Image 1 (tube, rainbow, N blue to C red):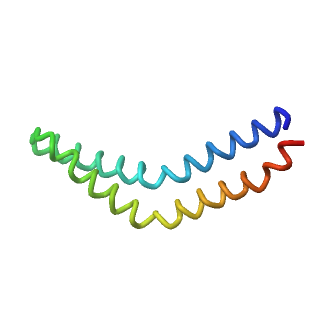
Image 2 (tube, one colour; image 1 turned 180 degrees about the vertical axis):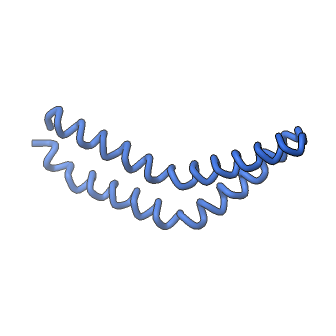
Length: 89
């Protein structure tokens, strides 16, 4: 295993991590922005109003994108495990 292999694995691991976390984080960010705009327009400063919608949207996003995330993570893991003999040489 040389430096190019290590960098390629690291790059692919970061890409998989971003793709796995991206949908949930993006939806949570959009809901947080909408709730913050609603709070600033109506001048309601209730802290739980910001957290509960984000938690619900995050849970729904995990339910909806869960199979995609699981498939991506298992595919990456199986590729890494199958390439272990190449790294030992």
